[in-house]
Image (tube, rainbow, N blue to C red; front, side):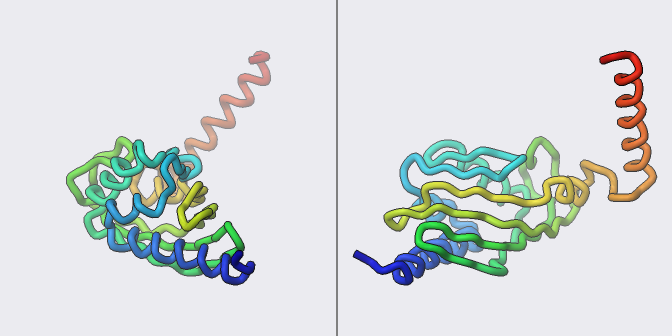
Length: 169
């Protein structure tokens, strides 16, 4: 039986190899790191299954951002859990929509954190977290933070809230 440091090293090695496949945009290799029936969720964006929609979603991402770059910033490993802080950049100039948006030439530069549960050398579950509102701003789907359009939207939402309170809705 492996000792905890060896197990942590194995989990870290699996995570490093998986994210190297993401960096290479190698869909075939990326999928091999998941256990059959493995799942992942980019919270607030998409739930992914392997097999299932995993390949389609990442394939569309890579087609939408043809210059997609991925960098691991930090990696912390436990026995079966690995946390990976990352940065992704790219230009939304490809031939595929992303989350319903058509490519518009905007660039994104986002950071996030994936928390992977790894057992028997395979990813069982990946919980990914990122600032979806910031990505939407960079893609032009939300107004810039602090801008007049954002302040107008906030004012309208607050007006609606006050009206609902006043009229009991």
